[in-house]
Image (cartoon, rainbow, N blue to C red):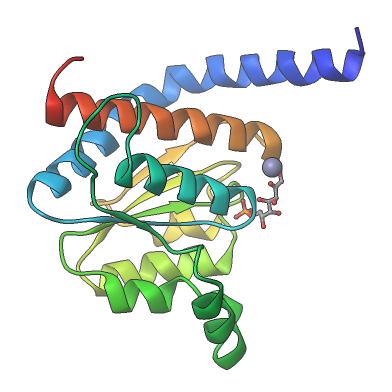
Length: 194
Ligand SMILES: O=C(CO)[C@@H](O)[C@H](O)[C@H](O)[C@H](O)COP(=O)(O)O
Ligand SMILES: [Zn+2]
């Protein structure tokens, strides 16, 4: 067996095991908050860069379409998908504004922002959290490492789910697992046990 492959699997399993100990509680709180927001007629905006843009879209597609069961679509918008909007904001203002400007246009009080950054240092995700607060929204932050500037911008009403790792790939792997937990908990809270 190629030892590099074995190492990736071993590290990924160990990181997930470690994460379970510290993340079960904030994941449950985040899912409750998301469920409540949906019941009250609000929506969830999501954003991130690179692999985390993929995660933001993965989450919104499982909300809008479905996760594992047959059910109505749930309201969510990924802010990383519209290249005309992204390029025009980056071109006319700055890349740091690409999500914040969309949050200001689409976000209404009671909506939630799911901000995803393995380093917590992506300026556009940090700015999106500030914009969410301006709009009367709260944030759920999926982070890693020391949480970076993103962590510092969160208020007591926000929820941080910080994965205990320093490795981007491992952090992204756990972020996706967290997203699937959130989808499953939201579905079971809204529609009952399958
Ligand atoms: O997927 C990967 C690395 O595994 C990359 O695309 C990665 O997401 C990008 O470098 C991002 O720009 C990193 O941003 P962040 O997670 O630090 O906010
Ligand atoms: Zn990646």
